[in-house]
Length: 85
Figure 1 (tube, rainbow, N blue to C red):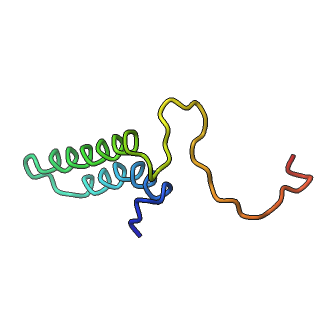
Figure 2: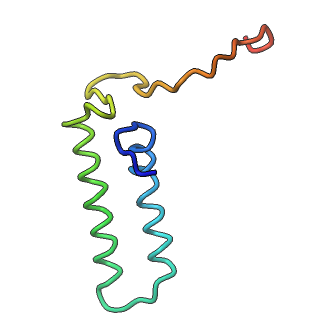
Figure 3: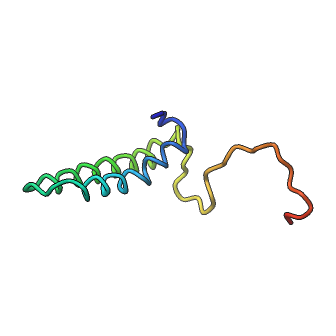
């Protein structure tokens, strides 16, 4: 489930982790600084994941400075029909 060597899984965690943490924080009772520490922890994790992708992105195939789409999705084997032009 948590195969971070797969680019789609890695980027999904990078995108949805802040939203999941925000939902968790929304339903937790406010006790002092706890909610701030949880959000700070999530922010640090996302920042580390982003920097890891940028500088050590061998497993996610990200190239800094490229101005085009960098994720290639697996093909399904279906051909485009003449109606999808």
